[in-house]
Image: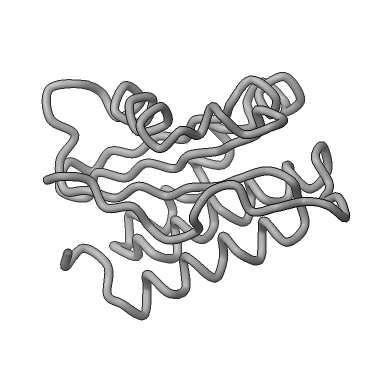
Amino acid sequence: MGILSSEEQERITHAVSLAENRTSGEIRVVVENIVGKCTALDKAAKYFEKLEMHKTGLRNGVLIYLAVADHQFAIIGDKGINAKVEADFWECTKEKMLLHFREGNYAKGLIEGIHQAGERLHVFFPRQEDDVNELPNEVHFGSN
């Protein structure tokens, strides 16, 4: 797609795999150029449903959405993880990601968000012996 190099995509996919190896939670990353006529949070919610993130067994999916050209992003957690994390957790995670985004390093910012989400998922939803990867780990590119 041109937003992320193939090497950056591989690093992001690897970061998702590493995070998910320690948790029963699922993490997805969606990247596109523009948000369109809605907010980044609204767009993230649409992708959350489209990618069936709400169908995980423990409702512990996390979606990180980035619209590069619009300089907007959002993080959405499902009911299971949102009920457990601190009220300001997603905002604190976004602040850490923003430090990298401001330098134009989108891959590093996404990896930071994946790492932060993975750590909290590990605390509240540690990996079980019978855990299966319910969703793909690759970066999903939006339609624009």
